[in-house]
Amino acid sequence: MKSSKPATPDDATLLDRLAREAATLTARERELAAALGQGYPHVLLESATALAAQHGTSASTVVRLFAKLGYASYADAQREARASVTAALPTAGLRAPAAIGAKRTLRDCLDDALRHDQHNLAATHESLDLAAFEAIAHLLATAKGRIFVLAQKNSAPVSAWLALHLNMCRPDVHELGAGAVTPTDGVLWLKPDDVLLAFSIRRYSRAPVSIARVFRAQGARVVALCDSPAAPLVPLADHHLLVRTANASPFDSYTAAFFLCNALVSAVVQLRKPATIDALQRRDALWEAFASDLVESTRKG
Image (cartoon, rainbow, N blue to C red; front, side, top):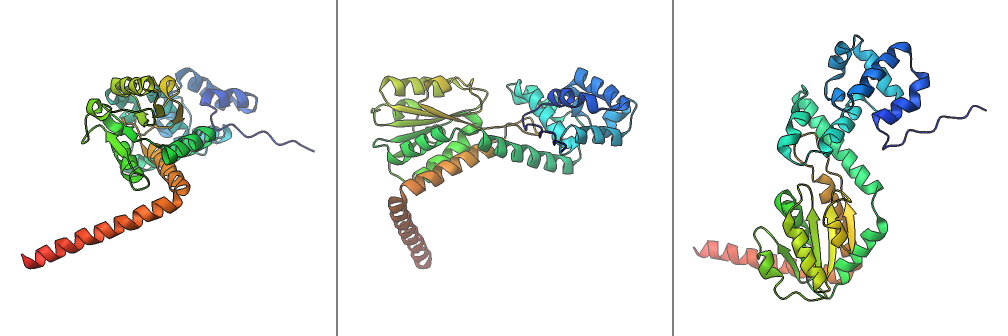
């Protein structure tokens, strides 16, 4: 019985795939493969048509080669290459030439964004440390002290969303950062029962690291949501989770970060089901009272 060939691992790069399939390539494909190996990953920032023209072959030959290598499409290989190029570049300014240098239609921009975010979501989910996720969920649900949520720069919208929804599930949730009490004043009365949940996405800010050290010095717990195990916040965290942020533009994508925060809120709701239902019903009553007051004041006016 003929054995089927093992599936290509999802994290295999183009170079891995070329080495794996070397014996199966035609002469024309081997010539193209040599050029790809020498120019990877920048060579894939061009379209299949442009790549074919540069190396004296047809676009159909390029497409067939990438199908043989196990890619769903040439665009999927481009996503991998773009992520590889931009991963080592810390700022949007440095990433811009690689991210927007290739000629793309506006439809390509739409499809590329979807492709990157789908990959970010899948990769974040598949590589998730479930034990850490469960430990963080229990900590957020049962901590006797306050929950402080902190983010800097572009992570602030995710942090604000998380703080807003955690506050509907449990008491004493506080945001440290834009639009909230300054971090210095916020940790003035820090206690060992308190918890810091901090975001750390490149470029890494100094403030979350400094504040995490204050929490650790007081015996409080630290949770980190980061984009890399090399993030400076990771060594200071009791638990950490990683999110993928690759994008088709010069800017990091926070879709996977929102997904992870959504999952944490869902877990906290599950762990605090009776208390959360009660809190949400009281919240509905407050909103109804405020809305009624507004209607009455409008009528009287």
